[in-house]
Each structure stands twice: as structure tokens, then as C-alpha cells.
Length: 188
Image (cartoon, rainbow, N blue to C red; front, side):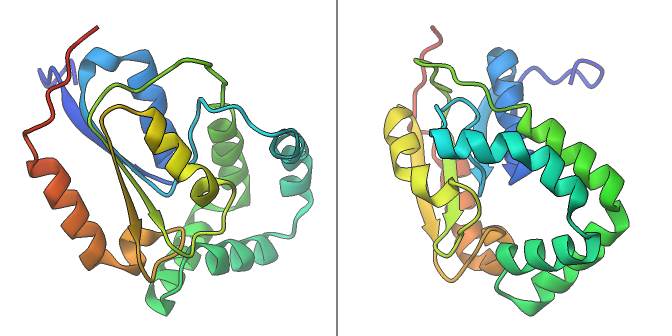
């Protein structure tokens, strides 16, 4: 952004990309105009003891899990449409297990409880109505209610890759959010 002379930008992140976008706004809030988070968990919410337990054993389990099975189960959990599943399978296999594990574990390190933290930017929070991955769907309403400038949208007929499972509904929500100039956020 500095090299291109971009003072502020809108960041859009899906799944682990949403976790990365949250970290950017956490550390550089003055550089973010709006934020679109698709099918991701909140980096700064307190995890339950069970979620913490699963997070702590994941590094060991993910390394032991056979790659083909991990891809198959991840793809099945992430998308409803067969063309999206095919795309995900191709993408997972292009990345490979070693890099996937590295990316996954780095993303998990983005989770840090911050009691009173608010993003305080116009935020579009999107999740698929059939997203059963992690705690994403479970915490969406609570997360949205804690954010003063949040628009929460459940994408029908969609799973974890809601923007790909139902691109029409997602694009409609995105265009509406990006074109809304009515939100006035005061810098604190």
C-alpha cells in the first residue's frame, strides 16, 4: 500500500483470508476503510474450553491425518456444489500438505482474545447457512452484535465457501455493502 500510495483500502477475506484481514485491521486500523469477512471465525473472541482444547491438539492431529483424507473431508465440509468442490480439491492439491499445515497453523496463531476490542469499521460479516466448520456459524450473531458497524448476512444454500456456493446472493450482499455510504465511522 505504501509503495502504491494507497492510504486506505477495503479488505476482503474468506476463511483463513478473513483471519489475515482481521489481523491487518487489528494492527493497522487507520489503513482500513471497510472490511468484508466471509466464513471465518473472530480472531479476538474468547474461545470455549473445548474450542481451546481442539485448537491445542490440532497441530499434532493435522500432521498425522492422511493428506488424501484431509483434502476429501475438508472439501466436503467446505462446499455444496460439485464444481466448487472440484476447484477446492485442485487448490488443496496444488498447495500440498506441508504448505497447508504451515498456513493453517499460522492462521491459528491469529486467534488472540482481546476482551473489549471492536473492529470499529464498516464490516460485512457473511456465512453460509450450512457452514458447519469450526464455530463460524455459532458465533456470527454474537460477533455481529458486538460490532457497531456490522452487517450480518447468512447466505442461503451455501456452506463454508458461501461466496462460491451461492455467488448471486453473495455478490448482491457485497455490492449493497460496498455502495452504502450511509455509515459514518468516527475515528477514536
